[in-house]
Length: 453
Image (cartoon, helix red, strand yellow):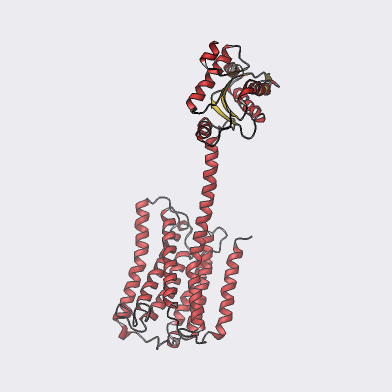
C-alpha cells in the first residue's frame, strides 16, 4: 500500500466532517460539564507527549526541524493548560489567575493562531543545510537547545496571558457570554489566515519526495487545525454542533503526530528485536563452518545436564581431523578451511534433529548425540564413514586435488551427576586413545578399572 494512502484517507475524513457539519454548525447542543475538562486534558497530554518524543529524537541526532516541531507542540500544550486554568467552569466557576470572561477566548486565538505559525516555522521551506541531521553538536548542546526551544514558547504564552489579563480594559471585547460573532468578525480572519499560511508553508516545505513521513503527516495536522478554526468561528458560539465538532478535530490535530511517532517506535522496536535475534544467532554460530560455536555448544550441553526432567541417555563426543596440519601445510589454509567446512557439512547430514554439533576449536568438533550408549562404537563408526566416503576437493591456487579426510572420535556416555567439564575430559581421554591406537576410528571412554581389566 502506498505510504500516502493513509494520509489521503485522513484528509478525506477531515474534509467530510467539515462539509457535513458546516451547514448546521450553529445548531445549539448545550454545555456538558465533563466534556471540556476531558477534552483539554487529552489535548494537552497528547501535545506534551508529542513534544517529549520529538525532543528525544532531536537529542538522538535528528534535524533542527524536529526540534522546531517539538517547540510547536510544547507551545500548544502549555497554552492549552493556561487556557484550561482561565476557562470558566473548567477549574473554577470564573476561571483562575484573575481572568476575565474573554481571557480564555484570547488564549484560544493564541493557541490556534500561534500553533499554526509554529508549524509553518518548523516545517516550512528551510534551506537544505538545515534539513539534514546535525551531527556535530554534543549531547549537552542538544539538551541545552531543547530546553531553550521548549522554555521560549512557555514564556511567550505566559507573557501573552499577562497582557490579556493586565490590559483587559484596553483590548477589544471579542466574546459576549458564549457568542463568538464578534470574534469571528474581528480576530477570526487573522486566525484563519495564520492557518492558511501554515498549510501553504508546510506543503511547500514537504513537497519533495525525500521528506520524512513524519513531516508529511504535519500537512494533515495543519488541515485538521484549519477545519477546527473554521468550524469554531462559523458556529458563532460555544456548545454548538460546530463547536463540538471543532473540538474533535482539534483533538485529532493533537494526536496525529503522536500516533505516527508511536507507530515508528513500535516499528523500530520490532526491527531492533529482529536484529538482536539475528546477532544472537550469528554470535552462537561458527563463522566458518556454520555449526554452533564453542561457547554456544557448551552452553547447550550444560542446559541438557541441568534439566532434571530429561533422563534420556545421550553421548558426548570429541572429533579431531587426523593430520590436519599436513593439509594446511601442503595445500594452504584456504584448503584447510574448505576441509573444515566439508567435515561439518557431512557430520550434520548424519545427525538427527535432537543431536548437536559444534566447533570445539581448531580442527575439533563437539557432538551431543541422542543415542543408546550400548551402540556408541557403531554410531561413532557411522559418523566416520561419512567422512571416508569421498575425498574433499581442494585447490591450492594451481590445481585442484582430492584429499582423503580421516578423523578420530572419542565418545562418552553421560551419567547422572556429570558436569560439562567431566564429560569433556572423558571424551578427550577417549579421543586421545583413538589417536594413540591408529587414528581413523572411534573409541568409547572406559573407567580406569574397566580398562585395566
